[in-house]
Length: 436
Image 1 (cartoon, one colour):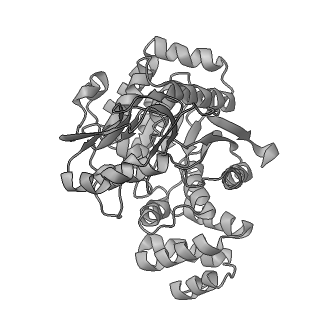
Image 2 (image 1 turned 30 degrees about the vertical axis):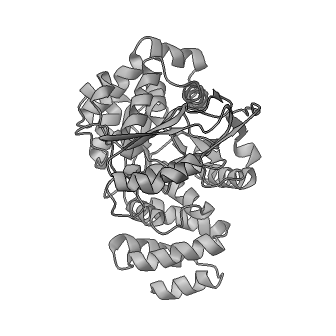
């Protein structure tokens, strides 16, 4: 059956329903290049505004999944489990988490993405490692996973290529916060991994794409439903993203913080989420030991060694893992200071994420190049007591003009009050198939 991009855009623009055949044609034509970026941009905006119903979403996800090769790991006897986050500021959890879980005997075939909007991307962080290659072809992906029980990669040219193209396009067209587009993007990548289990970290709060709790629940239920329908045991944890996770925002500095966790340190919130997620992944894999087993892989150095082994296997320089001070650092530095005594009542993740992106830690346009050394170190977080003149954040940047344009905005991320605020739990709730 023959279609045209304009015809299908008009249908969705006018709140019509796209048939499975139409969706299959559109995704295939976009992957092959006969549907242009500007036409798919229009379709993405129409979906952002008008949504996809259940049948459309199932067809869209399936078309994305089958736009290229789907991996099969029949030769791997270990349970295969992965984790994905919907995106946050300072969210580097996947980097320490996946080696921890893999060191417990679970196979982790991780396919990650790049930064979207104001949120960072795992691939951008990993690529601060000199020589590290995330663009593995399916054969090399399989070889690394078989050898090490862990692979840290992005979409190759043949693996979910439609999502690889659309992912970058959404970032540059203000269509990221769409439940159908988010869920189909995430789940098409994850379903291509031949998984037995999947953990989803769905963010809510000022720095999340779905800021209010009810829409975060809707996204979580949608993705759990897609996973369950495709035979993958899927669990979602809704977690707070009102302030950055950890102390570091940026690429090289978030990698440093991840390495700290694998060395037995790191901020309390990063360690707590890493262990909580790890427990669920072990549960999904049917592997016992829970938190104690995860902590043992840190204490023995097994988790850190797992990361080193995979870095070497994917062409990276392991010296930066052993000595994170070798990672990139932008040449210029500035400080934001407290303007009064009191307690931090707000440390706005959205503002901090936007400023970091505008300084070069992320992309405002599809073709932008990320500066790995740009970053913000958060010195004061919610509930902490500060004095006037005390640093709230340290900023590393390469372009002084960019910094001067963002200085005033960044200062607004912090609100200081006379009394300490209530500190809420990081994990809000769990959603699995019985609740989806």
